[in-house]
Length: 174
Image 1 (cartoon, rainbow, N blue to C red):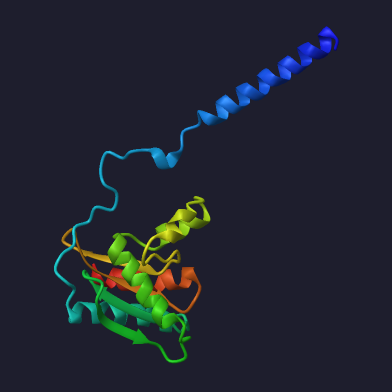
Image 2 (image 1 turned 60 degrees about the vertical axis):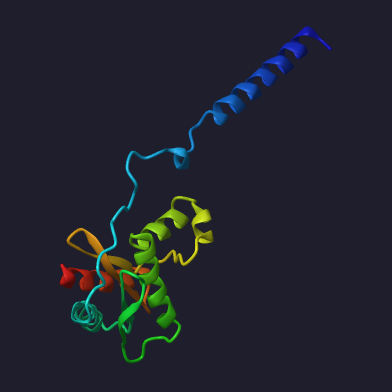
């Protein structure tokens, strides 16, 4: 081997070592330790039937105005069903999905959109291993007086359609 060839090999080796070391030193965003607990909304008394029905009336009105056939439900702060609406012609598979969205929003104290974004945009596929999680928009917590009293879940359209209708229900609650 010539000295030039040995120098080139050594330079290549040092470059690979430096690149590996630099790559290893990049912090992992999931290793960050927040000061406060995220989504720390305390659970409150369960939403009443009258409130749940008002939420669903607004959601169904929004879906009807847009000619979308959806299924919407409200669960209380213990993830128990309070009220449910299946619009005429809505797909049957969305019954369980609407309930699942509301249950995930109550149990994890956040919109199901957060899970969808985490999986699709954030590469956090580990989220799919969590119990009762659904990574699809349309599940939104219902908060009154700073406490979680329940959640609405809507399904039957696209995620964005489900979310629009769920937000209409939330707006009626506030």
